[in-house]
Image: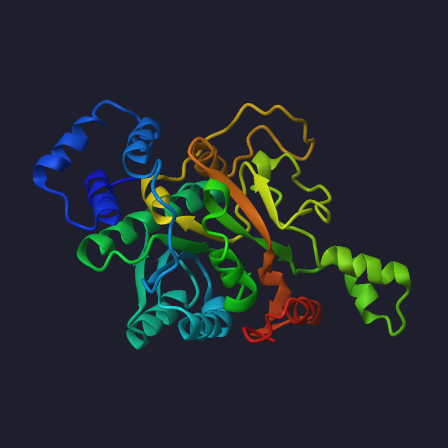
Length: 350
């Protein structure tokens, strides 16, 4: 949640629509002295979030936040169309944090920010990054939060919620964003996530797609893949990691304990109080694919959220996740194009 002074100042302005006084700031800071980050978050949530009235969809600017490393393909081929689509439908700003890219990502981001008034970037080269992927991501997500808070201190604070998205996610306004906006006040939700499907290489599916004549069994398999929620690692502390999730999203609003899936809407006040950490949990389940040393940055983030509100996956909000091996020379392979067309995302990339 650091820097703490910025966090408190923004939360106060977000709730009371005015700047905090020096005396009020000191009074709140005194209540956090000697507390660890988790308890500091609890103090701020109880002061600024609990029992707030429903959030309204209004004409305020909506912020989209993301991190990236080596996202040349995405920011050349996909993001410009997402940008155009969202700007046509909403009043938006984009905040992009990048570090340590070895391709042309920095150059592309700089050109995007120079061209568009509502794209804000922070780029860094960090020496001595940790070895593990999750630890690197935690640094990126927390640095994005700090970058965003510094902007809000100096500029328009915007609306009551933000979108978080990953660089490898295909989405648009109609199929992905609009269904999330329509549910922002659903059952004390603090975060609502997209039903993100795996659109990558699947040898069995690829063989079926290449068939001229398909059997009923083939159609059943295709339909199951079109409903396969991909992010099993972040989901419910990894209980279903590498397991069959074709039927997991069995209702329009699926309550979960932890999740992400690469795209979601979150109350800004909660996002500002929280942070990502390298935290493990005592598991009450057995999953032979989940090693004791495996960790997901979303587990701690969502675990703390459960104490204050709910997390849902919205079945009607659909997005696609892909990997680097799913494209070549600036083009997706045909199996990805199949998913894009079936999910009505072809205005973004096809």
